[in-house]
Length: 226
Image (cartoon, rainbow, N blue to C red; front, side, top):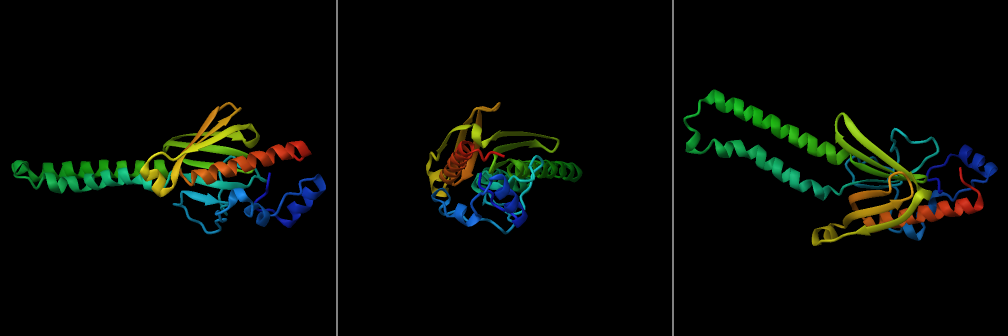
């Protein structure tokens, strides 16, 4: 598999062991990666990062290189942002009606306080769900991190050589306009299907996965598997 970031010491070790992998310039110039650019700057709210610098995760191996870091397109946050706006403005509208003039001020204050606490909880949960549900593609495997709440998450992964098929779809005007869609990956691992939902540039994601898969097959033929 292509190493994205390789030190001089590592290059010498790989040459000795027969792992003479192409430099990053050659990898980026591949047709599968056309239009993609390595992301050296840290952009924590980005939904699509190619060859990002500084990305790490719990189960990452020392020699493993992150090729893609994905999460749902930012446009998918609009529904909960819109709902949050309504929830924030609701008390001023509701208590502006004459129907509630007879309610004591203390009761109104307690109700508004509880309402805004509920609103903040909803906003925080919605943002964290979007932020921490990520999909990672490395030069060795794919990782799907499903974040459910602050105390529970589920992590699934599969080696690149276990990928059997990659498909994507971009149905709908909004998805086509903003260039995002779903990528479905069929594997021969314990988790048969991986779904990268509403990710930007699904066609590019699919092509990168196919390229990594072919590279892994070539390594197996040449006996260059780690």
